[in-house]
Every structure is written in structure tokens, then in C-alpha cells.
Image (tube, rainbow, N blue to C red; front, side, top):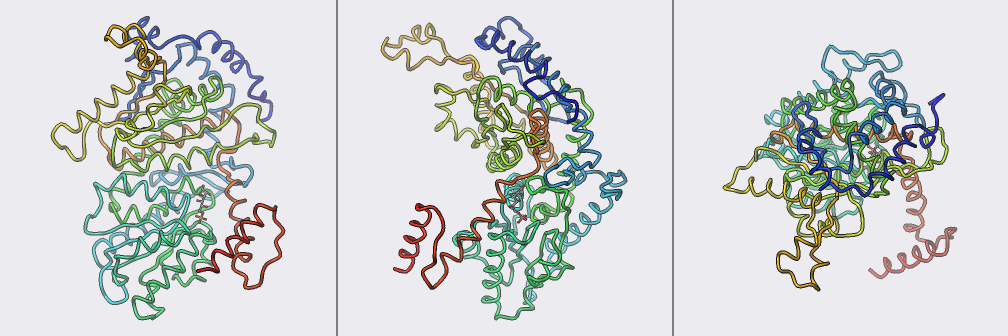
Length: 546
Ligand code: G6Q
């Protein structure tokens, strides 16, 4: 931004560096002993989401400095620019306006002078009509049978959101229907997804913003062949068994899908920010239009909280700033996201794309090499499973891994004592990470001397705990928006373009070059490096031995 000092030259940044030197040895044990109210005080609650951030290696001063860093980094102006529909995705000259996807009817957001909110609601209306027809059996397949199976074909942003949302909201889904998701160009994905399905009852949703993506186009073409082979080869069947979600009407119609059955979105919706656009069609068919609208309402509530709340009480801002704190001042390289909710089993995978594709950048928005670490690696698995595998390293390894624990008050499937046990584990883990177990405590337990070092937990390992009432469509919307805006906050501080993904684009182009070299009958002349050339030759030989 014009007139703004580079990040590391900002006063608050320098103050944070000096402050970190002072408090880096400070133990959470001491912080909690010194302030009996810390656990309640260092928390924030909004739109039904409760965040306990007291088990972080921060003091009031840290938080004040981090909020100042946000001010000095122009976070407020950035947020306003996003909500105003400005072209904040500089390298692609586009707005990043996923917040418009959940703007209520009657509000107005302009992109290039056009109000996009009515368009959003027109598409939502068309999706709802379609979803109701499929769910109610009015939409018939080629042979007159109703649809029982829905297969979403897409990849990246056109897959991860739909899969995650379907799994997360399965409790609310129509159990008489089957939902599958095909993304990988590895033929196994499609073959396994369709092997037990009857083509006469199967609907494919080809989801691709560009409708040119290699994997999706290849899978869609093979799905079409599978369908036609199963239904006697009449190409008219395609119109009844394929619909598209895309921004590219021409390509959709070239594929043979009637554009009357195409659900559109816009260039200002980034792939990883698109699960609440028409890309969510499979979600809507699964859970119904009313639940989908509740999901959007949850997103919108968090959007409004992010847009209007002061930084010190703003959940996404707090999460984002804490991530900056550990990434840039403690050298942490990862963040673990640990949902204690089986339905959120794909949430960490979804977040990996959202966070790492957005902030995995090494230059500023002006194209200058950054002089500080940016986006950390996000990873995770649902609890309690992770406790019996990788938590060991979080507790006793040599790395600092800030963790986000996510839990719910009510179980969607109450079963005996299960839920109390589940939540007891959330609280026990954050307690153990923060406070550990001292040498004295281990000795007092009668541990033999030689085992003492192995049983000591140094503690002081930071975590956030996010609690909500129960996992509903609205809660899911709030959670996703929480992380979207946390990513935005981080990107604003680091001054990177969180909305482009040139790293993905390169891979897309390179594979296209190699495919003909693998497929050509004649031995191709190869111009790669010696390793790539050698592997291509080796693969051609292996393949020919079939
Ligand atoms: C997301 C990325 C990427 C994209 C896929 C699929 O932000 O841009 O993951 O979603 O490459 O692209 P299409 O939807 O165009 O097939």
C-alpha cells in the first residue's frame, strides 16, 4: 500500500521483536498462576462461537502490539476494500468477493458498477429449484427413473469444499441418496466411485470454474462413456444425467451439457472460496435448500462480525494475529487443526487448500521478495484419533506447533458417555500441552531416575480452543468464514496476494506438455532434464510390457 512502511520496518513489528525477547521464556504455568482470571479474560465470543485463546504464549501487551500491527498494516482498509468489491486480487485484476455469495437479498455490492447480489440470489433460486426436483424425484433420468446417486466431478476448490461440506453435514442429508466425489485423474477414483451405481439413477455434476481443468474434463468424459455404455448409447441421455457448475458457458455446451442445466458463478469467486457458490450444488442436493441457506446465513454472520468488530474482540483477527505471532516471532512452521467432531474429518484437508494456497507466497503484492516467513503449513486429523499417533511430537518433540482444538457442546449422535469422553479429551490435551508435567511431579510419582527425562513434559505449548453449541449448517458456515478471514488477516499483515495461485497454474501447464510424450507411438525426442527424460523412457517401457 502506498505510503506504508515495509512490514519489518513498522514500529509495532520492532516492538513485537523486542517484546518477544522478553517473554519468550515465560511459561504458561506462570502466566496462569499470576492471573487467576486469565482463562475467562482471554476469550472472545461472537455469533455463537467461543474462542479461548488464554493458552497462548501471550500477555496483554502482546495482544495490544499485535492489534497495533494490524492497524499499521492497514487491515481495516483492506477489509473494507474486500467488502466494497475492489480488485484486491492484484495479479489477476479481480475482486475477491466470496462475502457477496452470502449477502442477504436486498443488500447491494457493486463490481464494476453492477450490483452482484441479485445475480447471486438468482443462481441460488435456480439451484434450489433443481435440488428440490432431484430430491423430490421430479427430475427423471433417461429411462424415467428418479435420481438416487449424485457424483460431483471437480478438483481443488471445486472438490474439497463440496466433499468437506457433505461429510460435515451428513447428519442433515437425505439418507436415501448416495453422494460421491471424484477428483483425481487416477482412473481408480472414478471407477471406485461408480462401480456399484446404476447409471439410470445417477446424476453427474461437472464442477469446474474454467471447464478446462485436465482432471475434471478427463473424468467427466469417462463418466459420460460409463453412462452411455450403461444406458444403451443414446447421447440424449447426457442431458438428463449431467449438469454443470461453471463460469464458462461455451465449454459447457461444447461438452454436450445443455446450458439450461448450468449453474453459474463469477470470476470474483476464487476456487478455494467457492463452496458457498453454485460449486455447493451437491451440498444443496444433499441437505436441501433450507439447510444450504442456513449455511450461508452462518457465513454472513461471521462476515459481519469480522467487518465490524474491534480487532481485540474479533475472532478471525485474533486467530490470524496469533498465527503471525508464532510464524514470524517464534519460527513455528505449522498449525495443527484438531476437530473433536467426526463429521469434520475432512475439515483439515479443506483448510490446507484455503490457508496454504492463499498465503503460500514469497513476494509481496508489489512483487518484492518478503523478508519474513509467510503462510505456515496447516494440517490435522480429527480427535481423538490423532492423540494415538502424532500428538506425541506435539507434546514432547522439538518443534513448536500451535494447535486449534474444535469442540461442540452437543453430540449429533448422543451415545452413552461418548460425548463427555470426547470433550474430556479436548480439555485434557490443551491442559497437558500448556502445563506439561515437571521433573518434580514425575519424580513424586515414583518414576525411576533413568525414565524421568522421558516422562517430563515441558509444557508451554500453545493452543486455541474453539467451542460451539452443535455442528449445524449455520455453525459450519461460521467456522469456514472464521478461517477464511483469519487467512485474510494474515495475508494483509504479510502484504501478499491471498487470492492468486500461480503455483497451481504452472503444474497445470507442465503436465500438458508431457502427456503427448507418454502417449506418442514413436519414441519422442525429449528435451527435459536427464532425470525427467529417464523416467519418461522408463515409464514408456513399463507401460509397453503390459
Ligand atoms: C483454487 C484453485 C484451484 C482450482 C482447481 C479447479 O483456488 O484455483 O484449486 O479450484 O484447479 O479449477 P476449476 O474449477 O477451474 O476446474
